[in-house]
Image (cartoon, rainbow, N blue to C red; front, top):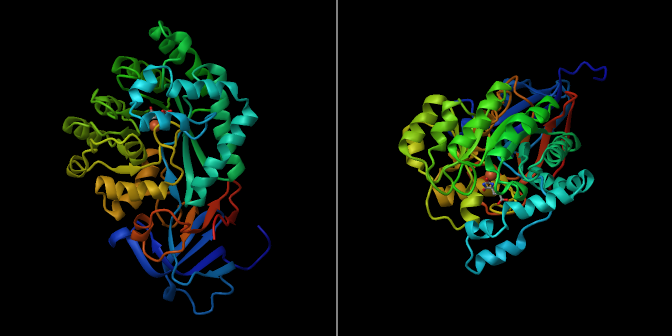
Length: 418
Ligand code: DI6
Ligand code: FE
């Protein structure tokens, strides 16, 4: 820090703050001010609680003209590191083929596995970085990225290394999730149990020891992995001290939500086919529901996730893009929020809470997701003045700027869109 008598690094004045930290809808605070220091929120309150002359309070003082500030958005479920794309399958689906048919015919996830294995680390990084940048340009400051298109030690490692590099390159937090049980690799076609053993006994422990894994996920589905197979990888994750989460109840009800809740998992994701007992188990375990309206939309799914059940049982509900080349080529979390309102009937407040407070919970991060003193200074500043507008507008460049609490603790603003 440079020698200065100023108390804070940054002071933002004349802001409308969606704090999620008081009794108002969105925790709204108008005529607000927020001070940032050493990468954290140092002060927050009403403008008139500060002296009239603020010039000596901070090294940088900015007047926002009433603009909205929210916590930086958190995309808690993405598969954004992958090789190639699957635009041709989009065509096939439009001509009547189903996602399951394409998968069973050797397309789907396996075709992305082939493209990902063929890409070296540099190529994978170059292809994936723009997707992360796109999310940032719409207000995201924390991203979860899964492996699962490598399906062998070397390629899963490459994916996770690229994920970590994206975090460093963009000065954001990237949480990595190991998704070895995403699809059966073609070379194990007749040897399912052997592949699960390889994942549990070799790939996961090796990558965990290399510090590349923050959490463990699986695709528990008829076209993915069974409850018993999922349980095997959860047992290993637990033994390694890693939290678990699950792709559950996306295409059918395998009672995956109750399984991940049994392991006190961070989240159960998708959940269109969630049962009431599954919702109850999640509520009891504090497992977050992560809704993924991009996949619902792109697959033209008609079965809605049971929002009323989630509300009734008080399950914390988050939203994410599920950014992936097959079922959700979605590059805007704000768009996912709008879809969650229009398609799932979430309120705009539930949607924004789902992309901040509850998304932080889904990643096990308690240092962000609200605007409160001591929280990480990851903020999004918007061109609009009311948070409902973030869900209401479809498309457009609403994000004026994101502020990132970089790893050094110093703070810089990355102007992401104008
Ligand atoms: N569920 C999904 O929606 C993605 N993975 C998963 O387990 C789809 C991934 C893909 O089709 O490439
Ligand atoms: Fe997914």
